[in-house]
Length: 231
Image 1: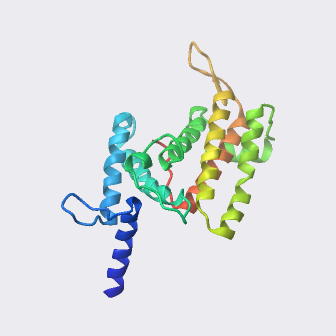
Image 2: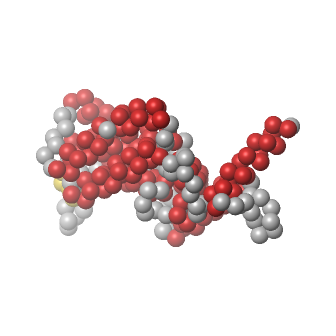
Image 3: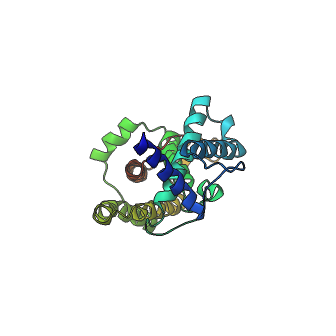
């Protein structure tokens, strides 16, 4: 019983340190971790509804998405900072879908996953193509993304040595930023502007997208963030 009390005090003190003072409710009570996470879910739900995602996602998909954003953002906000330095706790900053936040990374991940669905290419087809289709890196953005993906193993080795998890977070943010540049400059799926029918699918670029998504997914696993395929 004594050790349990110490653990709870440690958690509440840790939360309070986000603002360099006790993190308390209006009634003056120290906020519990479960209440902090519940508040995150409420705010994530409001953000998703603001973007009208509740009109696109099913009830189950909506529930998974808002929990993934809320829990992921709380974890990522802590891990993305140098563990030897203080920072100010802010829900608004954590749930922002711009910048180096879990929300931004989760949105980027779902965007990548949506590309193969748009192309009507199944995971099995992608897997088979990975063994038979060589990557054709002809655009500078393709080269830049491929090289960024290959840096992942070096980052993992580095954090195994120093345990500075913010290094992995910085890499993830760089990877998604590089992917955004690739996505804007390199068409993976070409459609007829009149009929909307698919004219061409660039399988090499789809494989590069899959490699990026796989890398992000693995990094999420290390950080304890749960990705979703739709958001």
